[in-house]
Amino acid sequence: MDKKHNFNLQYFLNDASFENWAKDLNKNDVSYWNNWIQNNPEHLETVENAKSIITGINFNQDYPSNSIVEEALSKVLNKINIDIPAPTKSKKVHSLNTVLLTTAAAVLLILIGYSSLTYFTNQSTTIHKTNYGEIIDLKLSDGTSVVLNGNSEISYDKENPRLLNLKGEAYFKVKSIPSTNAKFWVITNDLKVEVLGTQFHVNTRKQKTNVVLDEGSIHLEFKNGEVAKMIPGEMVSFSNESKKLLHKRVDVETPYALWRGGTYAFNEIPLKDVMTNLELTYGIEVQYSANELMKIPISGGIPNQNLKICIAAIEKATGTRIINKGNILRVQENPIY
Image (cartoon, rainbow, N blue to C red):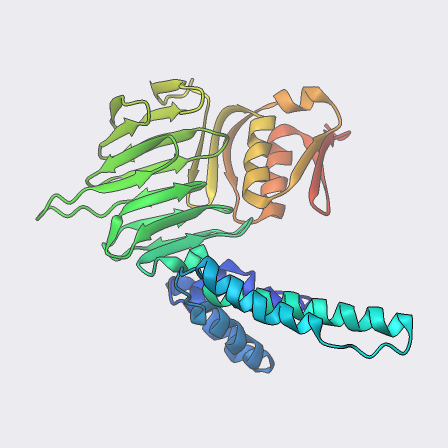
């Protein structure tokens, strides 16, 4: 944490890591925030208020009937008909506006009392969501490890953590349960991954799902009804939107982009595709001084835990110069090369 941050209530409410701490969802986040609070006791009151808001809003989704809303609205609107002293025209307008604002506020409070946030409607659902540039290492109750990349989300029922929905990018080490042969599923918009115990990478970026298998074996069920079996070293890419399916063995001649817990491994991937990964992970925009720069191939490992280190590695691999200004990365030729 940087002391330059304004640690107000909104800051804590918008921080996914803080939310994990408040809900006791991630041991790494719990350890970090406990240590941070101990070293920053002046923010304790704000921290506790933020925690109360995150853990205390537990509305049921129970909307009022039309008759209840109409009855409440009628009672409030009747107040508009009271006699309003009007010594001057301006005061009359002001008084009328006050009544109208009071009416609107009252109706809004009535509706708020019956409304709910979708996030809290299902108390059995657990959601882990990362901010841009944030990576978290999760351990599920069944022993499965999940490393969640930036700008990604997983959700599952607390009673069944082995049926998991994914948006974004994650690396899985699924814990096998030989006694029951319990399966593990990862569901995306394009397909379902069926697992017994294995290690694999799933990426749902760019309107398709990519799966790369490192260890074990998995079955895939596509949204179009087809099925496929993967063995270690294979890659599958499928888009339910375009219906395009790619299933092939990964070797030294195969262009690929893999992510394993904080490091990207690229093989003959154009710079434009590499930078697209950064855009989606860090929420940034990339510009190029020349179109030819987009085609520069990259091979090798690029760490992505830190944007500054990531940029330096890409510069070295491509011989380019990348200028970081605000939320924009500008790629240009490096005169030194």
